[in-house]
Length: 139
Image (cartoon, rainbow, N blue to C red; front, top):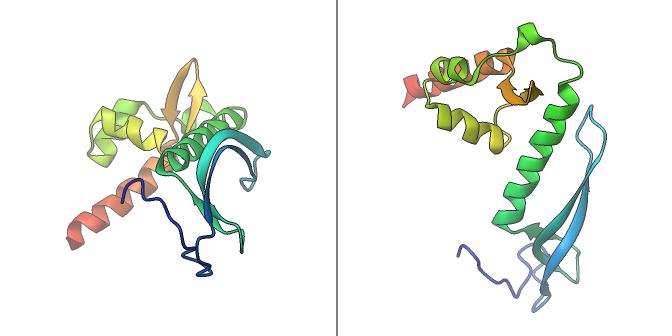
């Protein structure tokens, strides 16, 4: 099912209406940030209702580029005292350094670019650590 080719629309039910499309551009409007155009996307869309979905590869690309866009913009408004090192983030969230980088890549952990490095935002670390700690207690 990873690369399932849809024929019938899962939204409206139209038969044989799903078409694969490639090399699309999507304009994303994140709240509080300038819009971002993301090129080179692909997915499957219904010719009847217009609904559709991105491929897994495109979803990951959107998340990564959106996180990077927000990080570059946040770098102009976040002060150095609000930043943490990747090692500090790993310790606070009880994950590996690679796990922190993966969360930043996937857009699950906000960061900024400072001095050519990606640095997590300390406030977001505290929020994520609390959430993670709560979910571990309930498991």
